[in-house]
Amino acid sequence: MGYVERTLGFSTRHLDDRDIRLVTVIVAGTVRWKRYIDYLIMSLCSDEKVFSKMEPLLLQILRIGFFEILKLNVPAYAVVDENVRLAKVALRPGAGNMVNAILRKLLSLKETDSLPLPKVEGDDRAQARALSIIYSHPVWMVRRWIRFHGKEEALKLMNWNNSDPYFSLRVNTANGYTRDDLVNRLEDLQVHYEKSIMDEFVRIREGMQAVLQAGLLREGMCAVQDESAGFVVSVVDPQPGESIMDCCAAPGGKTLFMASRLAGQGKIWALDINKGRLRILMEAAKCHNLDDIITDVHGDLRLYAKESTAKYDKVLLDAPCSGLGVLSKRADLRWNRQFEDLEELTCLQDELLYSASSLVKPGGVLIYSTCSIDHEENENRITAFVQRHPEFTLEGVHGYVPAEFITDEGFYSSSPTKHSLDGAFAARLVRSIH
Image 1 (cartoon, rainbow, N blue to C red):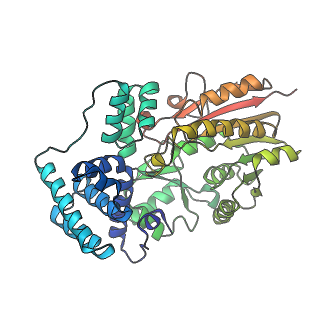
Image 2 (image 1 turned 45 degrees about the vertical axis):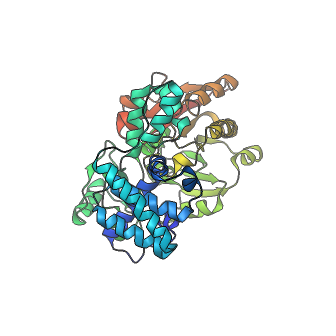
Image 3 (image 1 turned 180 degrees about the vertical axis):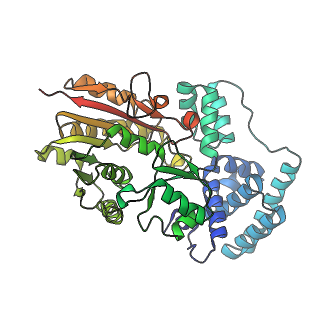
């Protein structure tokens, strides 16, 4: 069952492509704009207690109606009629009456351009609270981004996160395909595409359902992967004949890309604590004709590193992180992260980085990466690690990725607002020979 089906609680199998696309947009958009929509619903309720005691299903029906009215070009009468009917069928007639009253209030305020939004004024805390409502992000994220990036950049970042995301497809060269082959298939399917800065990638904004139904992923022609993750593989720079340990490997996008770069020579060990996700990884490896290159290893990296005597040419730690760089594609993630999570994550990242480092052979390379844009999870972790482990030296990523993605310190960093990619980070650390 997919994300849409889990959210709505029913199967979308009976819907046609156009309806699936619409349902996906509505679900993702409603989740993305939840804080903004909830503020408006609460403002239009006769009493704040009415909102606080509202049944979850009723609130969800209202959220969908508000999103359709505010963000989609759906006829107002159709939105009101459909959501009133849904409330009556799913709950009771009285619920339908409440939905009707609140949606009509919203329509009236929208027509007169008098939606009750907070004013961005007062001290920094007050402004952050107002912006968190207007742009529908948690307050702690807004405050943190304004503090580290400035208000203008924070607003750009929130606008990016609230925009409809594009998706990138990476052609599977291990199966003998080229990007031209993929482009030809997309043209046959009438899917609009853009060629990426990376040779193996193309971007699409619409048409993913057509790609799935045509079997392009199933037959191993391509995989869904953002270029930001592709650049992490470029930082690893897999070479034929190398032995590579991919820590925290599942679901395996980077594993498969690295394996395709080995040209049939070398080996990748894919280690992950989640057995089910490892199984999916190996199924994908077989589909991509890479299962003879990849060996799955089930276990906790921290325990594996203590017990293993094996050493590898390169070790990639794509660490568990906040995911603050991928919020445009993960509409739900912003609401599933708390500020307190950062401290727990950085402690875990330090533990995993220490464990991964013990698997690197003398003269080998350790690569640390995240899909976060937070310095605490990125640069600060590397600085702390190097201070404690002088046997490792930071090596700049110059020559591995385009100059525009290289920081002053020599790290790889992609930014949603600067590069129109997911946010990601990577560092190369070389172990001394002695």
